[in-house]
Length: 39
Length: 182
Image (cartoon, rainbow over all chains, first blue to last red; front, side, top):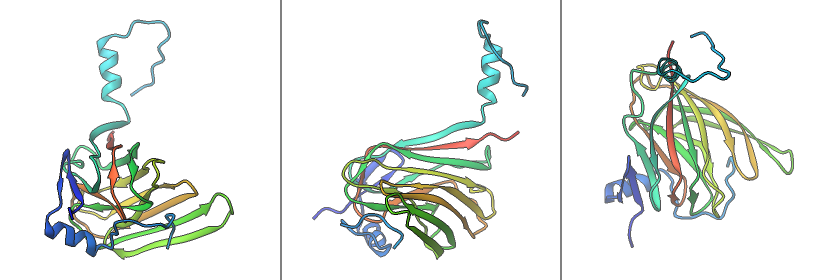
């Protein structure tokens, strides 16, 4: 399964394993059904 | 610069250049958001020319509803913010804080289903070796309100990273403006 893309200035590429791990560690999720709220 | 009112004159190059050079809000840089990205970094968006900046995101779409986090450089600590969010339909309010967070976790919203991205944030001091202060408004489809914050690390930064709390962003533009000094 491909990892999400990262953009640096105008360059878009697939995240490295390290970047993806950092993204997941930040609490990022692939999808959410929730309306953005202050939770 | 004294304000000059033009009526029916042909503008001279001198007048035109003077007004261009003395505009208050000056474009610094921008990036068009690519396809399905989960992180957007703008390098070299802060410099010694300006002390205060405006960051605007408009257009585009997100794959799902999400908060948009804003980070200075690689700094992952010391972000504080307070927000008062008002729900349009119910008049209900939320008070939200970042307390020494790893980013300004909710600098704006990305609402899914193609309703567009949004960010309108002012920063003071990001390039100076001082705390960076943040202010702006959060605007979403169902709620909105003011926010203010600080990054309590006295370091100079020249880049920002915007990350959705979920999903990906596609399209739209991140634009950074500087407030002209003097």
